[in-house]
Structures are given as C-alpha cells and as structure tokens.
Amino acid sequence: MGATAAPLRRVYATRTLTLTASLLAAGLGFVVFLQFGASDGFDAFDVLRAALIFASTFWLAWGAFTALAGLTTRPPAVPRDPGPLRAMTAILVPAYNEDPVATFARIAAMEASLRATGHGDRFHFAILSDTRNDEVAARERIWFLRLLADTHGEGRIFYRRRTSNKGRKAGNIEDFIKRAGGAYTYAIILDADSLMEGATMVEMVRRMEAAPDLGLLQTLPKVIRARSRFGRIMQFAGGFYSPVFARGLAMMQGRTGPFWGHNAIVRMRAFAESCGLPELSGKPPFGGHILSHDYVEAALLARAGWTVRVDDDLQGSYEEAPENIIDHAKRDRRWCQGNLQHSRLLLAPGLKAWSRFVFLQGILAYIAPVFWLAFLAASIAAPLFAPPIDYFPIEYWPFPVLPVSQVSKALALAVGIGGLLFLPKLLILLDAALRGRARGFGGGLRALQSTLTELLFSSLTAPIFLMFQTRSVLQVLRGADGGWPAQSRGDGTLSFRDAWAASHWIVTTGGVVLVMAQWLSPELVLWLMPVALPMVLAPLLISWSSRPSRSLLFTTETEITPAPVMRLHDAILARWDESLEDRNAA
Image (cartoon, rainbow, N blue to C red; front, side):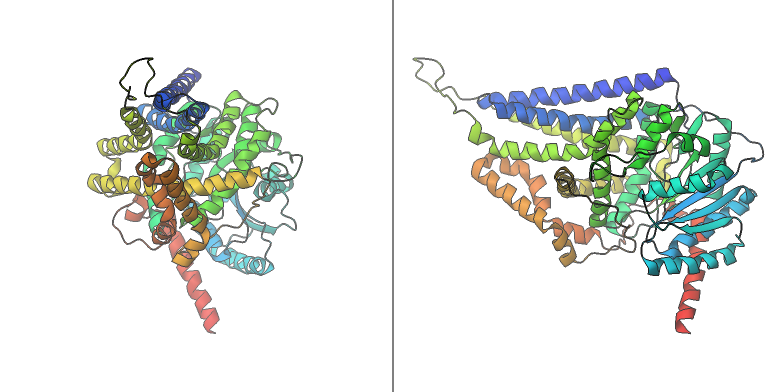
C-alpha cells in the first residue's frame, strides 16, 4: 500500500476531526487555567495567561492529533506505470560552498545505482553551483572531471557555476529551468547532502507517469550517517516517528500536499508554468527573495490545479542532518525567517484555503515558543498585579474564608500538556511493536529504551530550543536578516568553551528566571525547575550531546543494514580519499 491523494471526503473528515479535537483541547486548557488563575481573584493577567495557554496548547494538540491520524488511517494504493520509461528526467543538485569530494561522490553513487536499474540513460545529473568561494569553486571543477572519468558520464552529468546567486537555491533551480528545462519531462530536486536509490528514482517517475495531474511528489527522506549523540537521537526520532506523522499529514493535505525543498520529483511543465517566485517589496527579513520557497512552490502548484502529495511508503530516500544543537539552531534560524516571511503571503490571491492554513501553521511553529516564554514571564509577574486576597468576604462573619486549593487543576493541566507531548510517541512505539516495524530499530526492547531516552533528552533540550527559537523570532521582528549561511558538515563536536560562547545568554536567562520566581512567586520555583534548570545547564548539554555516540541505543534500519546506495557511496568516497592522500604525499 502506498500513499496517494486521498478522496476529498476522507481528507475533509480528517481535517475536521483534527482541527476540532485540537480546538477542544486548547479550549479545555484555557478554561482549566482560567479557573486556576482566578482562584485568588480575577484580573487581566489571568486572561492573558489563559490566552497564551490556548494558543500554545492548540499547537501541541495539532501535532498530537496529526500523529493519531497517521496511526488510524491507511492511504489508498498509488497508481504506477509499469511500462518502459519514456520520459527524460533531470536530477538537480544545488551546491553552495560544499565539499565537492563528498557531494560528487554521492552523485557517483546515485549514477551507479541508476545504471544498475537499466534505466540510467533516461536520467541526467545537473550540478548547479552557487558557490561564492573561489577556492571551493576551483576544487569543484577538478572533482567534476574526476566524476566524469569515474562514471563515463560525459553527456549525462553537467556542471555550471552561476556568476550571481540571485534568488539563492530557488533562483538557481529557476535558472536551470529557463535554460534547459524544455529538454526534460521531470526534475528530481536534491540537496548537496541528499542520497537516493536508483530504483527509488525510477519508481518516482513511474508514479508521475501514471498520474497526469500530479505536479509534485515528495518523498520522506531518512536521516543517515549521524555520529554524535544529538545526531543519532535525531536520526532515530526521524526514522521512528516521522513516517506516522507524514501519513497523518498526507491524509489531511490530500491534493494540497507539502514540498520540503529536496528529495522530491516535479513535473517540469507544471513547475515552470506555476512556480515563478515574486521578489517581495521591501528589505529582508520580510522583503526580498522568498527564503522558504518550497512551501510557496507547493501552494502555487495547488493554485494552478496540480496535485501535490507526499508518498511516505517510498523507501531509498536519504539526507544528512546537523550533528549538534548549535548547527541545528543556525539552520532553524533561516527556516524561522522564511516561515515568518510567509505572513506576507497569507492573503495572496487565488491560493487554496489549505495552503493559507499551512502558511499559518509554519508561522505558529515559531511563534508558539514565544507564547510559552511569555506565559512563564506572565506567571512569574502575576503576583504584582493580582488583587489582594479578601479573607473576610462576608460582612460580620468572624472567621476567615480560605481560598480553595487549585493544585488539582494545575496538575491536570500539566498532565494534559505532558500527554500531548509524550502520548503520540508512546502510541507510535506500541504500533511499531505490534506491526513488527520495531525490528528495524533493534527490536522491541531496544526501541522502547531508545524511545524513553529520546523523550528524556527532548524534555531536557526543549527549553534550549525554546530560547533559540524565541531569539530567532525576536531577531526577525526587529528586522535582522539571517541570510543563507552555508551548511556545517563534519563531526560537529563542540568543546565546552564553544558551547558556552553560543549559549551563555541562555544560562543567564535561566538564572534570572529562577531568581525572579523566588522573589515574586516562590511557589512557582519547583514548577519552573524542568524549564530553568536545563537552561542553566545548556552549555553542558550542548557540548555533551555533540560528542560521538557509542551507545547501542537509537539503532536505525540503515545502521543495521546500510542501503545499497550508501555502500556504493562509501566505496567511492574511500577510493577518492585514497587518491587524494596519494596526491598529497607525492
């Protein structure tokens, strides 16, 4: 069974149920907190905090019910054309100041994997360099020649470097489509760290051939090659949880699916006709070129009547990811700016309602942490604005009337929020054990241990991510442009000094939170410890999690049995590294 655009009736039913359940959960949190906050006298701060709880709980509930949708629905089978491949497909590999040895070795591995399918002649590779560093560009040209020699790929593998990187990645791809798009029916868009099986590419083309209205087909890439503790935990979480969330997303989005910018195939005509991106008026961060172009391109395809979908059943699609929290935060800074920039597009003419809602979700994903932080600040400051407690509300009654304890409501709210965070992952664990999927993660017991440890780690690092995301939002709102920094590769190990330099402000914030709570609201100190203590320990957590992992936990399928294209890549990279060492020795 695969994933396809589900019937509209099922799509609307899934959307309605998920949205209704999320609003009910948020509304319940609002009411419970309002009762708790008003127990010592009602004031405007109670309404403010309850409203912040509503917005934050809605976002958590939406994620939880998306997972439940993925667990309880099964998309229909996809159509595919089993005949001979007739179309020509371009495989686009944008590169921006990347290590050409690693990038081109991936291309060599994918080219060999495609040749093994017998359909290699129907695919061309185009390396689209936006590299600004002349030294890196010189190495690109040298290793491109090595790539051609190793693959005999002349006429099937092309390289060009733009003189201007206008529009960044989206502009790079647009430039290729204008110059050479007419020669191809489809384009598979990759990132420099993408890796994909040849058989997967062939299958993607077959699915496009069988669905003439399909404008874009997105795969679900698996993270591979992680070495650090942080990297392996993220790799496990992505491989274990993401298929379920993606299935729920597919069932809700229907024909208006996602595009994540890479490891996807597009119909060249649809993309060329529909996806020309405007340059927004004004200066960055809200003006200029659109950073998170992928969401916008998916919306433009849907506006033009093309189907956009994600097929979570497609295997053989891989990518790499940051190895430490700091590199993750740097990448997330760009995503934050791109998502907030979508506020300029919410009212763009002709967009599908769901596309607008997707933009709103993306904005809320970064605003929600600000809501949580504002809620904490408001809770600490609340005693300054609360009316004094009246212990003698009944005239002439000689005995004080003590307020009724609201601890039970506070506990219920905490348990409810914790349930939204943890229950979906535990249900995914149960589903994986029952369906046998846990075997690919070291077995049921190992998957259980990995899940519980991941839950602990994500709980400890959540306040750190909250602070980085809040800072990103505030930077964007004050007009700071984060640009498009090159991706950090390598092992990612950070010393304590490096971690301190990047997070000392988080330590200070955590200390201030505890001091202010002790001064203004001593009864909150214990409740704030799960948030403030990880902030104080941020450099230790960041440095520790960046170090190489030797644990047997967080095993994934590709660690147990590396994919064929991964083995090809390893062999090619080892051969190229050996020749480089020989050249340096000479």
